[in-house]
Length: 242
Image (cartoon, rainbow, N blue to C red; front, top):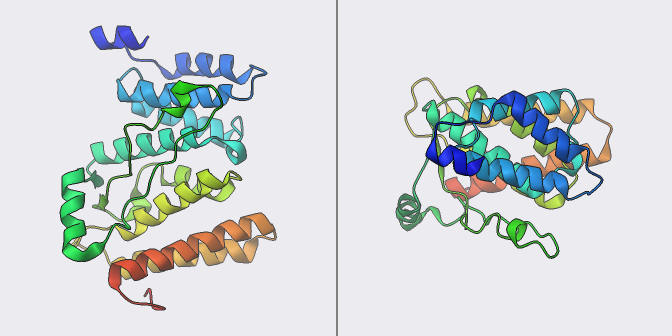
């Protein structure tokens, strides 16, 4: 299918993707979910998959609880991020700055905290999965052009972050989510960065008040901690993120 897409306008539809997922989901091999996510990621990059189709498919899986978010592998998150960034960048809601631009910003004194290493997916004796992130040394700096709460599929990122029980997935998803709320472009009309950050905090506090799950509470507190750390790095202050 990937070859055909390179020499034609062929795209995998939502119906076809559902059939492909069914083959992997019915397999007794636990690593097959990783293979499916890895295939999705590669297929989206070579245009075999239509981003809107696969995004709708993933949203349906999560909403219908047909995909176990708690154990979703890291490669799954990497694909979700690729989809999220591509979708919102195509609508002009955010911009992924090129590495050269990132280096220029670092020289301005912001440091290197705007990017983190994308961990390699470790699967024993499987070179394809191990190399799934070999072209992504770090996530580029993001420039958000709108109120983050209006980003397409933002709730998908929140859902993965709050429900993942895989440490590497939670760590990367929570960092990514915090970046979406803190990397707002300067002088966006009608948008106050402190208001956006306070909205993030209020949402976390509301969730903390309504949950009795120790694991969930820990994940929410981790989000708040990362928000504080990121804001302090950007502003050079401590203890005051408003």
